[in-house]
Amino acid sequence: MKLFTTIAQMREEREAIDGHLGLVPTMGYLHAGHIALARQAKKENAVVVVSIFVNPKQFNPGEDLTTYPRDIGRDIKLLEDESVDIIFAPTVEEIYPTGHSTYVNVDQIASRLEGIQRPQHFRGVATVVTKLFSIVNPTRSYFGQKDGQQLLVIKRLTQDLNLATEIRSVPTIREADGLALSSRNLYLSSQERQAAPVIFRSLCHIDQLWQSGERNGNILRQEIRRFIQNEPLAKIDYVSIADMVDLEELSIVNEPAMASVAVRFGKARLIDNILLEDIV
Amino acid sequence: MKLFTTIAQMREEREAIDGHLGLVPTMGYLHAGHIALARQAKKENAVVVVSIFVNPKQFNPGEDLTTYPRDIGRDIKLLEDESVDIIFAPTVEEIYPTGHSTYVNVDQIASRLEGIQRPQHFRGVATVVTKLFSIVNPTRSYFGQKDGQQLLVIKRLTQDLNLATEIRSVPTIREADGLALSSRNLYLSSQERQAAPVIFRSLCHIDQLWQSGERNGNILRQEIRRFIQNEPLAKIDYVSIADMVDLEELSIVNEPAMASVAVRFGKARLIDNILLEDIV
Image 1 (tube, rainbow over the protein chains, first blue to last red):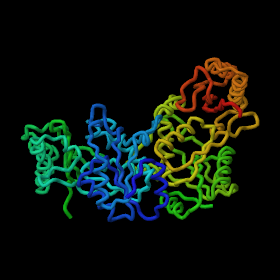
Image 2 (cartoon, one colour):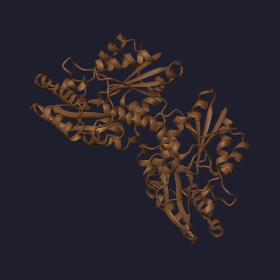
Image 3 (cartoon, each protein chain N blue to C red):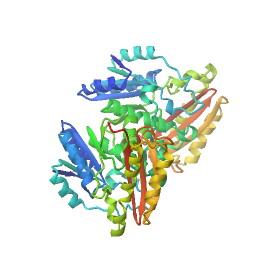
C-alpha cells in the first residue's frame, strides 16, 4: 500500500496506472461503512484509492471541525487489511493553499435539508469532491447511501460539470439494532446510544405504511415525527419525504422518494434515510 | 477537419488521441485574435480543438445574447485554412440540459471590474470553461490577453480546482490604429469605429508615464479618464489599475499590474487592457 500526502505524488502515480481506478473519498476515522465502499471499489476496479481528508470547508462555524475524530494510524491498518492500493491523505494547506477562492455550487438540491441547517456545507463537499476527481481521475467513485442528499448533490455536479467518473452508491451499513454507522456516533453517551435506533425504526415504520399503500406525504412525515418524539433524548432537526431529483417535499408520495431525517442526541447530530421505491 | 456537436462524439474522439491536445474555447464569429490562438495551439500540440459555443450563462439579462454575431459556415472555413483538427460546436441543450444547476464561482477576482458591471458573467465563464475542460481534456488551453480579467479568473479556477490543463495566454491582436480585435467591434458605427482607438491610446499614454517613473495609481487612472473623456462618443464604464492576484486597485503601482478599461460607444461595450511590467 502506498501513502501519498501531496497532489504531485498522487498525480504522478495516477499517470502510471492504466486500468480502472476506484476512488473512495472519506474524512477518515473509518468504520464498516467505509470498508464496504472500499470492498465494492475493489471488486470493480484494478486499483483502489481511499482519500482521507477532514475537509474544513464543509463544516460551518461552530460545528465539530476541531473535535472531529482522527486516527490515521488506525485507518492505515484497516485499509491495509482490505488490500487498498493507495491512501491519499493531503494536508489542508495542500488542498486549500493561500488564495484559494473557487467554489462549486449546486443550486436547488443543495439548498434544502442539510443545506438549511448547514449553509455552505454542500459548497464545501462539492468543491473538495471536484478537486479530488481532478487529482485522482477515478473511473468510478464510491459514496454511501447514508449521506443521501450528498449522494444526489454529487451525482448532480458530476453530470452538470461533465466529470468523467461514474458515481456508485453503496447501501448504508447499520449496527444490529439499526443505527446507521457514522463517525459521529462516537459523540453519543451510552444512554443516547441506546435511544438512537429510534431513527431507523421510525423510517422502517413509515416504509411499512408506504408499502401497504399510504401515499399522503404529510401523514408519513407526521408518523416519523410521532415515532421520534416518543424518545425524550431526541431533538428533531428535520423530517423530509422528497423526490430524488430536486428534493422537493412531496404531498403525494407516488414516485421513488427519499425519506430522510436529522436528529440531535446531545452533542451528536445524526442523519439517516431510506428510499421509498417499489420492490421490483 | 472533424466537426462534433455532441459531448459523446467529442469524448470518444478524445479517447483515441494520444499526443498533446490544445483547446481554443471561442464563441465563434472568429477574427484574427482567435486565429492567433489557434496558431499558437497548433505550434505547441499534436491536435488542436476549437470550441464554438455562444454561452448563454455568461450574458446578463438585457445583454446582446440574441444579437451576438454568429456565422458557423465562415468559422469552419477559417479554421480549415488553419488546419485545425477538430471543431466542437455543441448546442445549448447539449451543454445545459434541463435540470442543470451546478456553477463554478470564483470569489474576489471575479467580483471586480466586469463582475460589477456584469453580475453572473464570470460564473457563466467559469462554469462553461470547467465543463469544456472536462469534456475535451486538453493538455493546454488558449485564451487571449484581451480579456485580461477572464484570463486571471480562468487561471485561478484551474489552479483552485486542480484541473489538469495548462493555461496559455496570447497577446492581444490589434487593428493598425490600435483597436483590439473583438466580435463586438461589429456594433460600432463608422463614426464610433473612428473614435474607438482612443481606448488603446489612453493605455499607451499611461504606459509611457509609468515607464518614465509615475507610480501614483490615482494619477495614472485619472490620465486614462482624461484621455478617453476627450472623445465625446466614449462613455467610460470603469478604469482600473490593479494587481494581478486579486485585482485590487493599487494606490502605488510598483508591482506587475494590469491597466484595464471598459468603454461604451453607442451599442458597443469594448474592453481592453495592458500589463504594466518592467521590460526585462
